[in-house]
Length: 134
Image 1: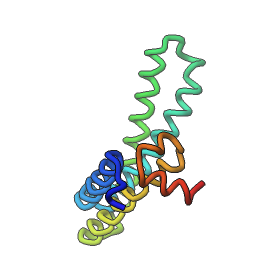
Image 2: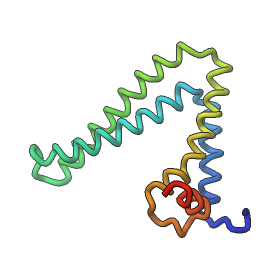
Image 3: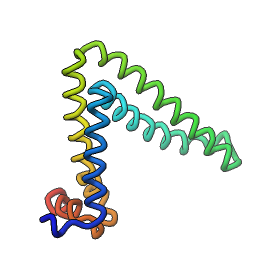
């Protein structure tokens, strides 16, 4: 199977390792906060872009307003989740669960790529997952 890997698959493997190491140092609270803040930022960015055309006619002003809304949403959700979860876990458990959550997040990269259905010919992993997903 390794001989079928393409360069994009190696990038996915490196990202899985990077997410695992980040999870080890950030802990579970940091990884959960990052994941939820990313989802909130994407949601707020999409909503802000759709609603901002009412208030902003100039495209760069609209983009700046959306960027500020995304950054603010990311910051608020990240701080809230990290503060709430950080008090629940002791330090060793937080690091171990953070490592595992980073590993899971890295393993979900090919699944997300397979669900998108874009450029599946560049990744053997994503194309194999797409056969089971879709």
